[in-house]
Image (cartoon, rainbow, N blue to C red):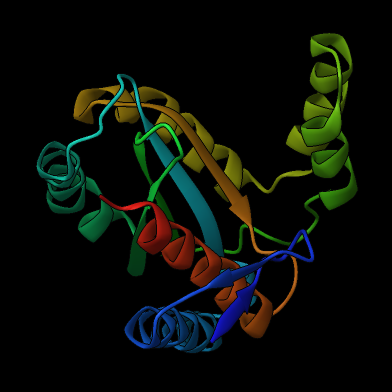
Length: 184
């Protein structure tokens, strides 16, 4: 079986069990978004401040985050680990927020900021999408700027979901497939 990457025509060849794991995650994500609603679901990325490559250490830190933050702050969440080509580990989470974080968000400005070649242009577009964010989303950003370092995390990003439950499921399924391909 193959899993298409969202942003290319490349295909990753997965074993049967890897494909089933990826498919099951994608289906759980689809159901998650349907249950909590697209307006309250966010895609959250957590990277470590240091170069964590050992799963035991990554698990220790994310379990502390789950215990002390995620379980209290969000209605529900799904966490997926990803190992980069360098071996470095980080996490992608789907979180169900208590309030609408999507309405009014300027996805075009967000895309422009991500594609910007210079810091000045990126800053311009970041101000635009930042101003479009709901007060609930801006509060989440503020919270994570202050809280992430306490659990050994550095860069964090939380964005609303752009499309629909099926697309989100495929997107998150891609990360599990990528991790399965790169794990030691």
